[in-house]
Amino acid sequence: MKFLHTMIRVKDLDDALDFFTNKLGLVETRRKEVEAGRFTLIFFATAPGEPEIELTYNWDQKTAYSEGRNFGHLAFSVENIYDYCQTLMDKGVTILRPPRDGYMAFIRTPDQISIELLQQGERLPVQEPWASMENKGNW
Image (cartoon, rainbow, N blue to C red; front, side):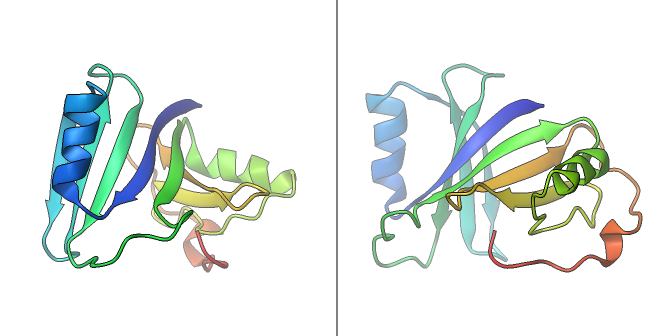
């Protein structure tokens, strides 16, 4: 398993950019604008190739996020998303967002911190029982 990034939501993109680049000295590594979803993702790291901080800027957010709502999730890549999720289930972990797409799943810690699991490399072919599993709760 490899740690990839942690995500936080920001209300004011300019303030966040100033803080993470000019004050903390992080480097913007990539950016994705999603007009259909009305959000921007900006990734920062201490250097290219290092674990990242993902800032999520929701274009229509008018009020500050409540404490706890601004932090999104931790993300890890795994060698085989299906095998890893099965191992977690065998240990009693609930898969909240199953890897129906062969690429992404979500679980939560006992303290309700979301963890995103991502398939290393290309997504795996869709397979059962994962393809038919429904989401559970919030993730």
